[in-house]
Length: 238
Image 1 (cartoon, rainbow, N blue to C red):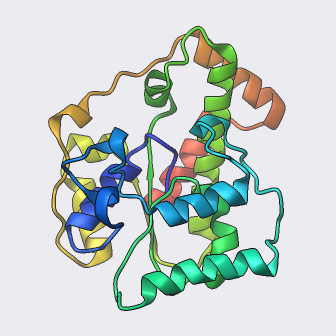
Image 2 (tube, helix red, strand yellow):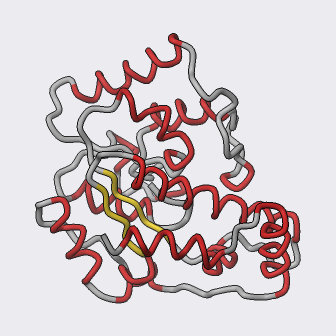
């Protein structure tokens, strides 16, 4: 789990190459590349989350942050249960990645088998650069909202579930081996290091556009970037 562009694909690739199947075919083909579909992300689960949120393929920061229904109808729940049964059939170990599980996990949790939660978070200011929000106030505000909603959803999942959980920080993972060792110890298995040099490049954007968006979000919700990071770090330290 984690906000989009925050390291979820890297974590998923590490898990897949270390023996935890995270997809099939093009979904996990290292020769295809992210933009052509190799995102270490199961398409059937992605489509299910898309339908739950009514996202209809919208860009991540424009995805609705709340499912239209607090409780899915029986037919929809059966669809989710079928996806899980299909994965469990003949697979003793498997995983699934979609950043939007930060938003939909409460709906999945009652029907999930015994599982572990792996979360990752990244600086809002790094994402401001990735999403190119400078000079685009409405886009910046959507990014700030999405960053908070996804990361608060991650914290709620970790604190509200009985499932074993770990949160790693993307920047720390790219700086040294401590986070990778933490993840390896948490999972109880050796991990293949899939970090690449180009992933280490990170430019933070702390200009006026993102600062104004943060202020507007704080005025609307009372939430601050620092408070959300504190919640993430508190659970990362567990």
